[in-house]
Amino acid sequence: MLKYIIKRLLAGVLTMVVLITVAFFMMHAMPGGPFSPSEEKNVPKQVLERIAASYGLDQPVWKQYLNYWKNLLRGDLGISYKTIGTVNEKIAGHFPYSARVGGLAVIFSLLVGIPMGLIAALHRGKAADMATLALATIGISVPVFVLSLLLGYLFSYKLKWLPTYGLDSWACYILPVVCLSFNPIAYIARQTRSSMLEALEQDYIRTARAKGVSELMVVAKHALKNALTPVITYLGPLVAGLLTGSFIVESRFAIPGLGYYFVRSISDRDYTMIMGIVIFFGLFVVICNLVSDILLAIVDPRVKLENE
Amino acid sequence: MNLLEVKNLNTSFHIGVGTVHAVRGISFHVAQGESVGIVGESGSGKSVTMLSVTGLLPDYAEVSADTIRFDGRELTKLSRKEVRALHGSEIGMIFQDPMTSLNPLFTVENQLTEPLKLHRRMDKRAARARALELLRQVDIPNPEARLKQYPHELSGGLRQRVMIAMAIACEPKMIIADEPTTALDVTIQAQILELLQTLKRESNASIIMITHDMGVIASMCSRILVMYGGAVCEQGDVREIFYGAKHPYTWGLLNSIPKVHQKRGEKLVPIVGTPPDMLQPPAGCPFSPRCRYCMPVCRAYMPPVTALSDTHSVACHLMHPKAPKIGRED
Image 1: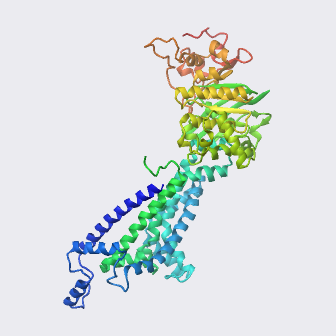
Image 2: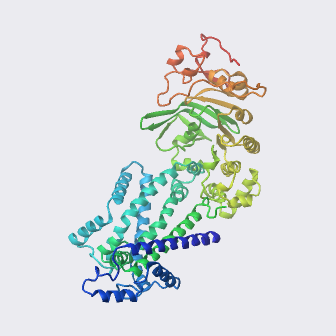
């Protein structure tokens, strides 16, 4: 197990090197820069050049790349070009907002999606199943920006039940969490339904019944554990995706999270900020995937972590 | 006394395109301590018969019977919960494919102790002790280590031994073995059969052996039911079936057994044709389309059951006094 984790972490490091390199050069390939005249119209050209030079932006790109690595290896992500403070501080300051909303969305998705899929599978072909399938189809096909506007219009503007923006009270969390969870709920419900139906057809379910196991335990023990393995696989990308924040949901509900700042930093050409968040997201995805793989191996003993 | 008595069992499945009549009016009995073989080709209704008797079919199956009497209780009148209490305690079941019949995500111990905890209310330690005893009884070496393992860590033969241990865990009165050796290779088959025979000698349980292998029947059972097209076409004790079979289908089954003295290059004798479509079962004898001795009456009417002795009966129009006298040809 430990050997496997180390192996995976080393592979993760390689992934990060590739990610950083590709992101760095792609970022520099974008037209314009943080202090280009097209960005800052009212500042004289010479001043902009001086600012750029003080950040080392006048050097050739490969040199900047090496410098970036030098600082990165010391754990220094640099200072933000467009906002006040270091990138490290920015991430530490904004990530908690994204993580809180995203974490709640993960829990909500699982708490709603799994039971929904289960009920649908156990009432196959009946009204509950149809309703779940319809909802799941809507959940997968409605984009989050449409949903967030619709829900905001209905619950904040028309009914005035929920606040429109901010994170000041628990009520503020409801709309963003629901918007973030909508798609995952649809996915989890569909996945749980189909894998549950598959599990219930298996021979070992018949064996369990032949042992006199009650219907509840057949479902809750023998079938559910098997049905949840695909959901566990999905958990890694889900947690990584939701905790790092969504630009659409965060900008719509004015949540000062990382997802929002990530997109803003790109349009600002805030190089250090872009790189910092890319690295942070990358690490997050690598670790979440590793954790969900380990979790899967714990649940399903047939999954071999080490390949002999 | 009969441990199991089934009269006029009918099972059908309602599926999209129509109704599959899998079992059509079967009656049979199993005496205390007796082993009965049910033989027939795939789709003849052997497994469905036993799943109907034990109430293990899915909800879309429709089961009706005049009686299903087990150990003095009328199963058709029991609630689901009462029937479930019999599963694993008084009726043990062994299924065909040990590769898929055990839950891959639970240890042998977990699965083996489940019926003990359920029916015998054993605590963890007592159930574990009994599980070890059971593994020894089914000749699994190193049982302590095996308990902690998962099904995928065991070979097919070992898994089937675990299945058997599970079936006999609560010392059932009746064991139903549904093709217990079909999925195993030949040497393992022999070992499992030997184990079943030993268990049979040691306990007074009745065994119902479902198989399409006449050899397995000959070595295990005292009485045979031959099924075709969802109905029993002939039944009798082993001697009567092997040496005095009267139904052309039984002849076909017996002729298809490879012979020890068979010459190299000599072909096996198949039964020509395919089993009937149970969505539209033939009006007459289900075997008539494949029968070499088919008469016009065979296609029109189900043959009546003719009793030849206390144990031997056959459902064939050839038994009619006016029918041509035809014997088994080799």
